[in-house]
Image (cartoon, rainbow, N blue to C red):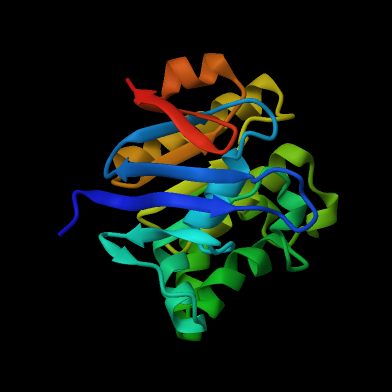
Length: 225
């Protein structure tokens, strides 16, 4: 078995109409059990990297592997991958799809094909764990940005991924919600989830991260402690 959870080998990707590639031969490996941080300036490829790790984008050249096996980009293969690799977008509006908090948390579980009784049980567990019982039937458009990010994280964790990816998770959060989010990431990591976040916040990277990647112009230029 591969020592890496996820591997990217010489991945290239250019958005339609773009003058420059977003990923330009990017290669990296994600070790199991680490708190990983991706750093880099705007436009360096951080978000595109995460979207390839989750199978939303497919490399135009190169390969992405999960536990040593290349990703399979048909419906069944991607559905399986997304039970293993969860992604929380920077903007929760791009992720929240249902009407209420509990419906949104149930959405991913239903897509995973769980029986109705198992979905209800798991939704109840997640509402309790993330202290969302009081908001369970609240319409999503009534929530603050911090609450929406919290619900998006809860929805991803409902399917119990092995690797959790987060794009700028503390962006636009006040200090209270940022601390709460990082504390929850620590708890998830202690429970066995490997976590990788992309961030501009150097204080968060230095205080929270165990393994750092620096990306520039679509390439990995540095990694280490």
